[in-house]
Length: 453
Image (cartoon, rainbow, N blue to C red):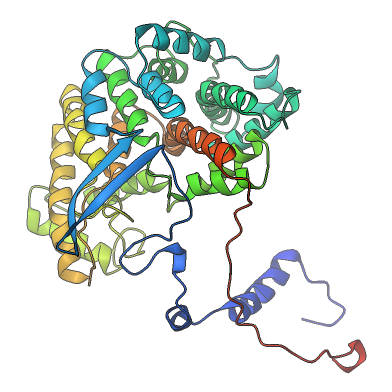
């Protein structure tokens, strides 16, 4: 390029991006040399302890005679097994509101307490006047998580007590955000679908007599219609995604930003930004896309040898997105099994039968069974590998005719409950900012004057 020729921004970043890559590259062996745990986890997946919590607990290993032995995964919310909680409500009522109460207040509500809590949530399902028009419909985006984040930050402008850190005020803010997040997501999708995709535009107000799961389907569908089974399965998906041990990326983000003294809207916006990553909340989309690719490239889906061969190609970076991953398989903590996936599978099967998707369920089950064998054969692994909850959640959303753009937002509608519980716990117990340490391996240099460079 000639000296006087102007360089465009894209040309500049092409050149200097490579400089950044070379300058900032740190040899992987240095992490082991200095004892630094990449991603705050060691080679066995054990995380660095950064806090204490009452909110939930995960178990993936047991110690027998001093040895760490993998076991079937277990998950507790406020001391109650997730298996017992789902059994307790799944046949009788919707569970989202009941388990939200449990995570926020630490105990299971009686009928009176649950009824009062549901009234509070229903009364909070309102947005400021013209908010849908002025904020959600303005500059619609295919990335609904970004749209939701914008909306959450905009809601702060309507809150006169936005910066008040008292627990009662933070609880009020959390309950309001829990109530309206489904509206922000679904309305954001409708705005995108109308202005960017040219489809019809409709906004359905939530019904105060319906559950959160029912309202999501009511607001999403043009005719407002859904079956009880559809709403029940979505309700269970929300409960299973509500909370997960406190050590996940978005919950840790909630804790970190809360510890800085930031307001609830900024905290939730930060957590949403964390969750949207494909390594976190976006994994279920990858499962659906991977299964679609498998259908296109495996001639006989009843032939397990062909499925096994395709899974091998995934790991060898020869199929799908060539990342070397079988999406929906494996978890940072669980090894033998993810309890959420075990619970979910039975309800997924019921929905598949009702929707005439038995063959698809059969394919998912085959992949769930064969993938751990293929991974064990091709990879040196340090713990067992099993299907995680994302493996089936994307399949469920597809059967519910939920668009891909809303898969991660639905995760957010659930996980905001866990974020709220952890934010309150952080504010109640800790008055120090979370400030991790990084070991500098920078070389010191002598300053070179401008004229000598």
